[in-house]
Length: 246
Image 1 (cartoon, rainbow, N blue to C red):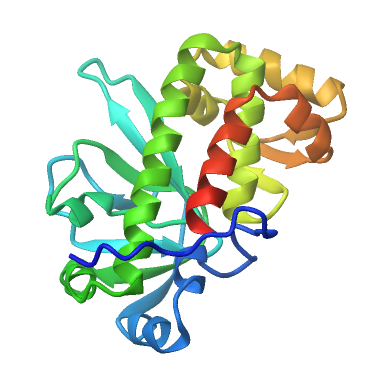
Image 2 (cartoon, rainbow, N blue to C red; image 1 turned 180 degrees about the vertical axis):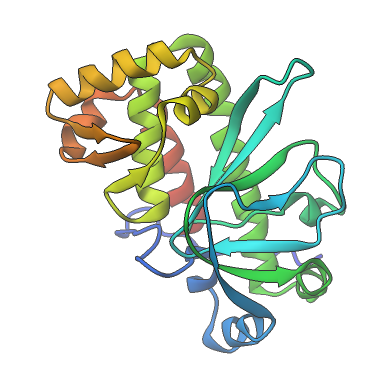
């Protein structure tokens, strides 16, 4: 495996992604990016479209452009909690990078939009070339690991209002738009809390002028205020993505 380190300048300004593009692909040289795009299909996806199911072989890898994926764990009693999100900053299908053909979690589209899809065999073939793409995927794996571990601590230690603020900020980063279609029931599953808790906290954020929430649609109207309402976990994860992938 190529152990060359991808250059990162932490003092340089960084944008994790631009609307309608995938950041990981943007990091590639033109020739390598064109080759990968030639192996991908551009698709429109809807809410709850599956990417992969736990225990089943991963057939393809998705690189979202304007959609967002939830990776969730389901307990034996049917309770569901989100363990990670993927948007235009990354891709879904990370177990294939580690040589594992399946995942212990489910992944599905939480926010609709467009995505680029690549067959699992093509993905592993590109990794085997040990080029820039393999380096980018390796660094993304570390960034995604940071997201998961920080979320574990956040869900255990921080109040629901801070957690919801963090989650909304991360969602906006990944879909690159201020309006997100989300029901209270869905938010409750993602945060691992009761629906009544989501209603109370979303109402408080709306009363503070940070969001508008109506009929399953949340609009972020004061991002700076929402960042102040969030815990430190949002900034920790964002800095790690910027450090590794800029």
